[in-house]
Structures are given as structure tokens and as C-alpha cells.
Length: 203
Image 1 (tube, helix red, strand yellow):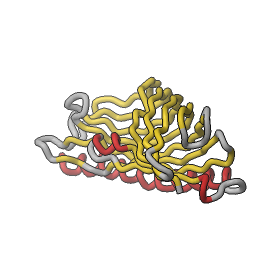
Image 2 (tube, rainbow, N blue to C red):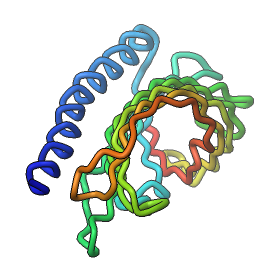
Image 3 (tube, one colour):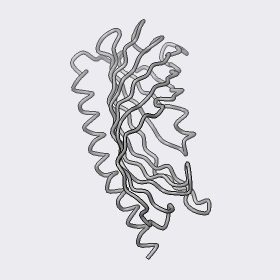
Image 4 (tube, rainbow, N blue to C red):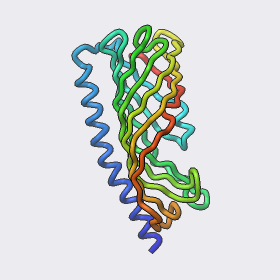
């Protein structure tokens, strides 16, 4: 019975991941369509947040385009499928996508910037903040800023910090493996966001 309940939790999570793949593709198409008319090879960048890998190995990638000297638009994805077997399962599994814009005070991909984005994600966490497991999805908008330090002609190191507001619907389970439902809720949230030390490659 416990095994079946655990499979039910994991099955629900991975069905949401299939939907996330479609959302990520749609975000990428939207970002490309928005900027393709004006973008050239010099206006593109690829980036990854180094701090995210400390979050239980969360894989992440950002692709951006700069159609104007002080503006850039980007699509970003985060993915973590990992569960760590330390007694009861320890996990911070997530699949998310975001579409955003940055305004640069000097020039695109250089110096100070402000940032805004909208994002959607599904998650399945266990034993992160307490002994319980949480599975759900969230939609939110984030605002913040940062500074891009030029390491060379093609490389940047971006430092960023922001805040995110939105809503989340989730189910709370008694543990990561057993699948006993304790409660189901929808709530608003305000969290720190875009805490990053991001390595960026100008294409």
C-alpha cells in the first residue's frame, strides 16, 4: 500500500513535468518570435546560475536576445529530477520556465541592470524545511536587479537579487515516500528570487 501511494505521488509529479516541457517550448518560441526580427549573433547570450547547482544539483540555463542597446529578453529553465537516499528521501525536485526582460543602464550585458520576469513551475520537495513532503505548482512574477561584471570580450559574471510574488497550490504529505495526504492548500507567497552568480557567454 505504501509503495502504491509513493508511486502515485511520483506519477503525478512526472505528469506535470510532461506539461512543463510543452510550456518551456512555448516560452522559447515566444522569446524568439519577440526578438528575432532585430537580433543578430552579437546580441545573443547563454548563461547558467552557478549557485543553483548548490541547490541539490539543479540544472539551469538562460538564453537571451538583445534587440536594442539597453534591452534584453530571455527565456530560462530550471530542472532537478534528483532524489537523495538519506533515510527518508531528501529531494527538491523542480521543473520551471520563465520569460523575462532586463533594462541595462549602460549597454546590454554590461554593468547595472533591473529585471522582471513571469514564471511557472511544478515542484516536489521532501525534508527540506521540515520532515514533510510538498507537491504542487506555482505561478509568479519577479522583480530585481544586479550587475554584470565583464570578464573578457565574450564572458560575464552576473550578480543578481530580487523578490518574487505569486500563488501556489500544493498537497502536503506526511513523508517523502509514504504518500499520506495531510492537507491541500492554495496560498500567496513572497519570496527572495534570482539570487544568482551567473556565468554568461556572449555569442
